[in-house]
Length: 443
Image (cartoon, rainbow, N blue to C red; front, side, top):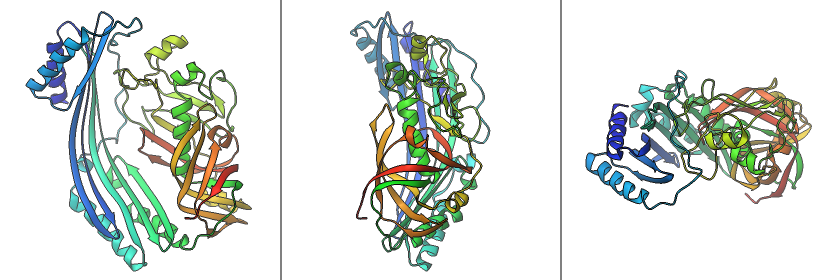
């Protein structure tokens, strides 16, 4: 943080009386990759990016660099000031915000041991997995990654906020014949990952998937494990729960605040302040994030805002700005779905005929207004008959509206899992009726 302060102070000195905003992101990450039961790659990376946005008399110019020595900063600011004078005036340009109190980050997001994890630790965990895979006639593939990041947002109107966080992600794919199984766990603390359980889960799924069968396309009851639910929730947040899409009429929530659009069992919040999806307590303008209840018992209550969309909507910013400028507008990045009363096992027991899905792959958005998406199942897809898993299935392509799927919910699990993609998401498993599988595949 001291280095970030020093860098910001130098940029502000060089900018003089021109308004300046600085974003600094420093990160260190290390990854060990394995395939065919052996380590194939071990890499480490240290990076630093500095973004400088200058504003003066309605003009704005943004530049970035990855070196913070005095000469590099002086050259970048000098060039930016020259370019600033050539820009057209923007009558809608917002001045950098004044400082506001920002909450202390939730405990447990930074682990010094995780930041300093040695390659030997990662190698030992992978070696143990490889021994078990060989004993079961399997091959394993995947990664074990750890890292640390420090984000600082500052401006010469007095804003200076920083957030440091660590992460560890253990991702395993096991193969048995034609069958694949996958499991993954994320944590800010590498010591809290259950490495044995992740490996066992992937291997068990691979063993059960060794001889997959095909089923015809159509509408089925599905039981989605958390990774698949998180994929759907991402698209719901990305396309429908931000203020820009809502104001433009592109969101499923446009004109629908206060209406029940999803199943009453679904409550979705964006909460960076506490809980399993907690993170940085400020946005990319340095303003405090607020906890926002987006959907409450199926009723759409709110969308997230930055300063610009809040002004257009006549409300207050919720502190969800992305780096400025951008065309997306504000977005939720710390999504949490409330748990239910069931379990994955109970969902299977209560199903006459359905499909159990481990995860989705290659998902894309087709129609933002209804959050219709398409993709494929992957690494563990199974037929459920009369309350039990009876056989493995070949992968299926689905084409499904998320809003429709989240209206057809039959059960949510008490247990939830947190993932660290696109911010963070914490979700349960979910049972949904009439889920549309549009075609079968040959693998």
